[in-house]
Length: 379
Image (tube, rainbow, N blue to C red):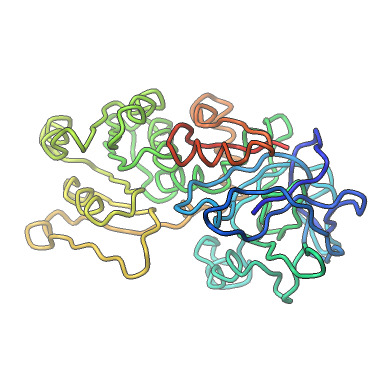
């Protein structure tokens, strides 16, 4: 899985209708056995279509999947090179971040809730355009090339207009790619769903990119007690640097005794689970005080269940909700995160390490080992 063209100094982007020059076939990746490392292969670009915009160069942020060799990428940043004739919100030369795609036509999309798009599964995981075609091919065969509406492990990408977020040109593109998924999810869960008041308390379970984004967001809105929970001391040290006022290593400390000590017996106002581990979700629920809110963003396997105590907790009037991609409208929310970063209130650059395309496997290895929170491949 992976591909390459001659190295370019330009940043990467997706947007518009054109894909890339015929003289420079796009880098791309195709399926390989899960045990095989990523490889760089050239593929052929199809003709542009009306609505899809392409991007060039830039930075791609690999996720930390259970099976890196089979996983896709969901975030990228770059520069628009061409737009389709029906595209209205993007222009050639725009600096953009790519986020999740959505149809833009269903009830939820038109109600300002695009992350709950009724056609979301096909938009994100169909790996084809609505007409069944793909942007790229290899040796005459179609290559699934629209994962998350973009498929951006490539030097060029032809993407859905709804995946594109235009950003200020003074923001560093090599840093922005991770905003399109995990950071959007963690920060959005706090800022869009919880909306904590200044002076309130929050506990975040899991210190990965999503959890760190939540901690930074909580600090940005002046939560007074911000608790990071993880099982790795190195992650907890970084959590304090990013805004946590307290940390708990749940593998060596009594979680609930520590929470009671930190909150003075009042429990917390808000809890966020990023782990998708049912026992941790239960711990998060038990940590809540009266009128507390628990948000779960971790992607549990279908059929996974969690039990809650609903007898004595009934009088607490607490809330549990699941949240996708921070319940964001990416075209609105991601520029706001960049504004917070410019003000020093969302220092996500501390999570990022950049790799060349040739070192993409090293980036995956460092992500899997926990040595790096957000590896970014820069073209």
